[in-house]
Length: 311
Image 1 (cartoon, rainbow, N blue to C red):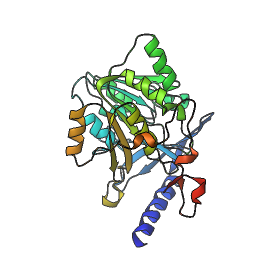
Image 2: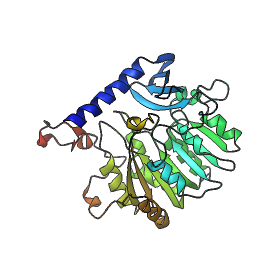
Image 3: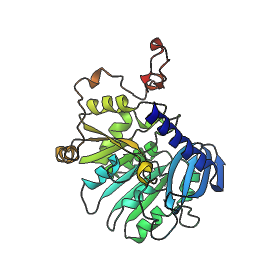
Image 4: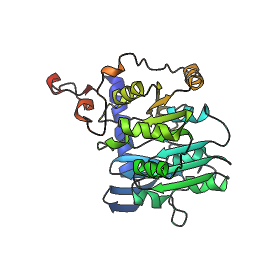
């Protein structure tokens, strides 16, 4: 009970700290309310944090020395960082579904090509050159990378690209759009993964961020991996608040690929590939059928006959 109370208390402190921060930007539209707040980390360094409702969409340090630091769910030894580490070092081609503050562009180096998709025009504007509140994308271009922000629904945009014979041939495709209580289901169906597969190189990696306090998305992704003959590794990385690095967030990523060398490299980093032998017994999400109810994280008192998963 003691450790659990400490974890809860630390979480409450984080929420209180965010609520008391200096909120200097508010934008409301159909997709929700965006707020940018400014506050200091445990070491006194100032950063800007983006919230959509109560969901963190990333943050960036303001100082020149720290503005390119990769933060939150993307930090060292996270699943997405492993995906970037063990794919080609030079001239990397990367797609990102869910722009946030543009943190993924922090990985970009000269010669790399990035496409970042986001449906919310207000989020897109936060990284626009003329009025940027977050500069990860701008900084990446200054380093010599090609960074394109693609507005609109990512799936529709990718379908248009294929029709225009613009197969992106991606080394890594990152899906980071599933952290809220209302997820875009159409981005995680069999048909959508077939689309992503067409944009990936044969040895490319699909990195899916499944951290979600409301939904257990792992069985959904596991079933899709089995259906499309991907290998799969789930990577759970720890947060850093307890050792003075509160810019590191705990995260759960799932990595899908047919690249056996990549799977071996990640396994050598102490993560075991997922056993998919029984995965075809799990429900398959398609454009015609997807049940959120069956993957809801339920409290301990939840009646078993209502379904859901243990939290």
